Image (cartoon, rainbow, N blue to C red; front, side, top):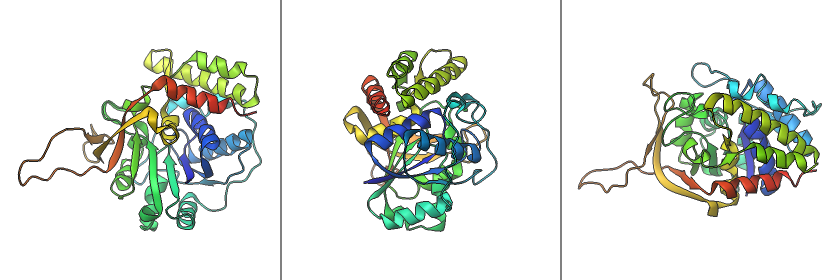
Length: 311
């Protein structure tokens, strides 16, 4: 299976990209607004690829949601990867194709053998589906970080990636593609700590040193916001579940996105009821494999081991 990562780097995106590149056949990155502007997230993606010596294309995608506008996530600092200021700038050029064209061309070329890992708002994927509906048949699976079965992080019930483009998320959820969801309820079970940053720093590698600085910044931002010393391992969880499914438990669930209510906009409505229908009643069909449980320490260890393999 080949993979494209749709991403908005992003401190946790940094770890997810590097982990995926060591464990999966990643053939490209597409970028989107989210943790910062799409111009910044694209620069960050190019810098990450240079740092890790990843010879893969980076195609820039959407700079705003399908409806309305968005707010940059302050937890990621001024440029989306403020903790990675030490990562050198790059002269590498982005792919001349935009993200939508790139996704469609790659899905067609690798039909049935391409999966997507979506780590930011789902705008690029939704727009690609709108341009080429056959994309839903060509893509094998989409593993995404987003949503929640419970509380949110931007609002009481909305998670950031879905909240920033709920229309796009709903389009993808209704597409018929096999979907795997790593929501806040799951990612909060795998926690990163300063001890993990120290371990990467002590490895003495170039990538490990940058990773330690990035994680240390991320931990400080989370501590200021959530008043606890550790941080959830968000984006890497959407990747690790593909490599180590034994560490995860998923439940077939019907999931949709609230688009109308101002108070609940962006909420992922996960039908977790364990019920049988009454005679004549039709219950919503599952459309997402929702992550409900993960071996957090083992998942964190898997991620750190991959980072320490870099020079």
